[in-house]
Image (cartoon, rainbow, N blue to C red; front, side):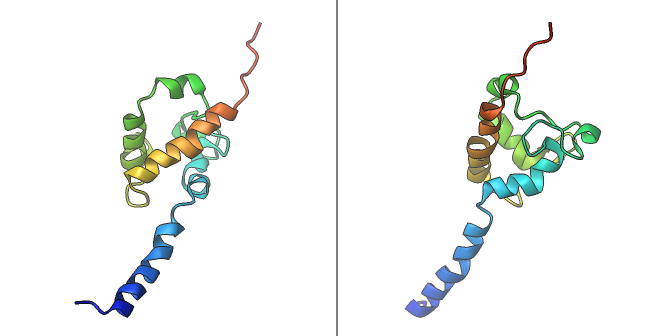
Length: 114
């Protein structure tokens, strides 16, 4: 049986690790914005060269299944690496809901060319 103080220490030592990776906006800026752009437009520094998807395109995003987007985040797609070693499935779903989908909602529609 583990002494109570050892169990408490174990909880305390593991807690910061859990909270550390959970700032998903920061995760997006560090891992995704290089290709997808800070605004999701796909115009990040590597976006043109690697074909960064325009995540702010609401029409495209609305046609995507959540499970397919989560799989792409975790396993990668094309030139995009997978991030399953950095985040787990629940966090990938939160990244999609809290960071990526709002990029499309914030983007103002561009006037159509006449």
